[in-house]
Amino acid sequence: MSRRAVMQKKRMRMLKARMFAAMAAFALTLAILLAGIKIMAAVTNADDLSPRVKCYHSVEIEAGETLWDIAEREMGPGWSDIRAYIREVEQINGINGSMIKAGEYICLPYYKS
Image 1 (tube, one colour):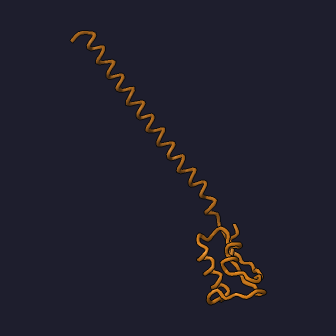
Image 2 (image 1 turned 135 degrees about the vertical axis):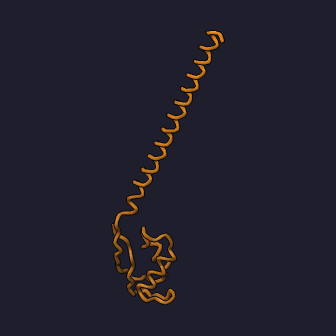
Image 3 (image 1 turned 30 degrees about the vertical axis):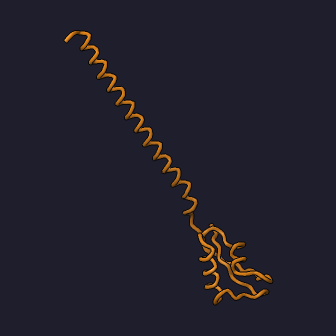
């Protein structure tokens, strides 16, 4: 084998080694980036995990208002579904169905951080 062929083989091995090193560095960088994104998402969601206390307040029912109207106005974070909130309001206040009367007061739940 000529000296030139040996040198060319050596260059190819070095080129392959550099390409492997570059690909490994890229893979490591990508892994670190993805881990960082996952950590940031966990930190962002940490606010959602802060301890919350369920509290209650009362409101007077206005003429023509329904539980749905009140729930749309008063429902805050902590409930994902307005129907679940209305069921809880009915349970707390001993309401069977949605019969409410103007001038009455009902107790409404809310979460406080």
